[in-house]
Length: 75
Image 1 (cartoon, rainbow, N blue to C red):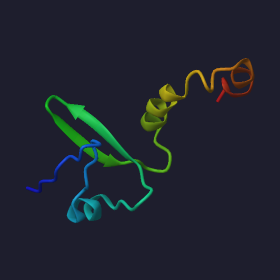
Image 2: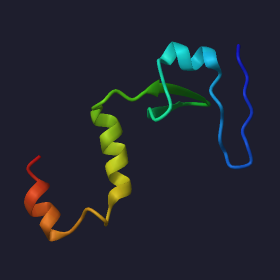
Image 3: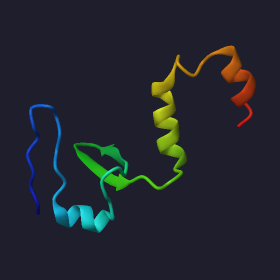
């Protein structure tokens, strides 16, 4: 078992063994899946539909103009 602390800003340093196991490097993205009182952390692959759907929710209304709908709704 490995332990790390949460900083005052809510940040956590992943232990080196975990970073190595996940194959993550600076700039990579992680996804957090809550399961009851536990959290599963995974590396986001270059294109992962679930991650993109989650991120897209944060883009509204910035990406919600008539122009955006006309050009991107069929993607």
